[in-house]
Structure formats: C-alpha cells, structure tokens
Length: 251
Image 1 (cartoon, rainbow, N blue to C red):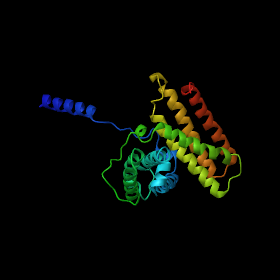
Image 2 (image 1 turned 90 degrees about the vertical axis):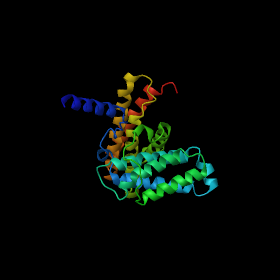
Image 3 (image 1 turned 30 degrees about the vertical axis):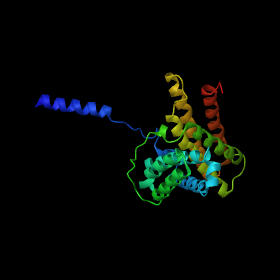
Image 4 (image 1 turned 120 degrees about the horizontal axis):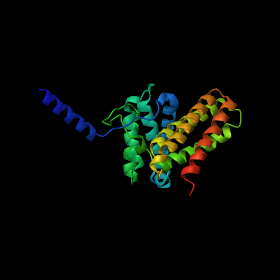
C-alpha cells in the first residue's frame, strides 16, 4: 500500500509539472487601480472599437495600429477586472471580453474583427462563455502597443499635472494613470526586450516603480492634489526614462 501511494504521488507530481502554470498579475489589482476606473476605461475602449469598425472605410483607416492597440489594451484591462478583488457588474464575463479582444487584435479581415467585436459586446452585456479566468499577462497585448498607449496618456498627464484640474479633468487624469499602472503590470511580465537574463530583475524594478507612481498619481488626481500628482508624474517618468536608457539605448 505504501509503495502504491508513493507511486500515485509521484505520478501526480509528474503530471503537475506538465500542466501549464498561469501566473496572476505581479501585484494585487485592487492595490494598483480601482475597478471603477478600469471598467470606465474598458468601456471607452469598446466604444473606440465600435467607431473603428463602424464601416469598411473606418476599418481600413484603423486596422494598422489603432484597432490592434485598442483591442490589446482592452484585453489587459479585462484581465485586471477578472483578477480584481473588487466587484463590477460584468466582472464574471470579463474573461470572455478579454479573449474576444485578443481575437480582434489578431484579426486579419473586417469580417473577423466585426465578429470579435460582437463577441466583446455580448460578453460586456454580461453573458458568460467558456473562457478561463487565468491568462498569462505577457500574452495579453504586444509590448509595442502597451508603450504607445502609455506614451499617449503620458502626454495628457504632462499637461494636466501642471495646472489646477477641473472635476472632469481630474477624473480623466485618474483614469489615465490607472490604465498606465495596469499596463505597467503587463510590461513587468513581458521581458522579451531584455537580452540578458540577469537583467530581468532590473527591468521589473523599473516597471514596478512606474506602476507605483501611476497608482499614486491616480489617487492624487482624484483629490485634485496638484503637488502630489506632479511629484508622482515626475518620479514615474524618471523610472520610464531610466528603463529606456538601459534597455533601448541603441534605438
């Protein structure tokens, strides 16, 4: 009997090593960004995809970069909603929104993209499908799209953190910072730009610092604390610039 139990245990261990292991985000989502910000920004991305896919001509104008980028960022936001410790109306089907968004990002035709958008809207309405909650963070969105999204939102924050924000601007700034904080988690896990394995911890240190500062910026924006928002913006950009200096110095 003892030998039988040992054999079963060894077999189980062997099978467990063969099964795929999906890591959650490197930080608790609720500590990174409020789910309300994530839902609002995900809704905005869905609206943007609807506009891009409204007609064949709008698709042709957006298929190169905008549609894949919007869909990729939506996939990241959806996974964050899946893993968040907070609750949202369509959180149970966020995994299905994520998979449909990934499909749109990789679509090769207008019809395929429209089919993916229909699946996004169906899941967004609350219909749960067969998608699994787990997903590898480095496979949600291409790193280039992550960086472009961060750069676009960073430009808006650069202007807003230099002035007294209106209520509307404060909400927008908080949302931008929250998205950037979540995207930093994806960048933390996507280390393919790092050529030397021993330098991966440094890449991830910069990503984590950027995330922490964007989380702080979001909180400061909501309080309309101009000084704290500007300080977080400066520190976040220092981490970003230092990372680029280290890993993209040849570009």
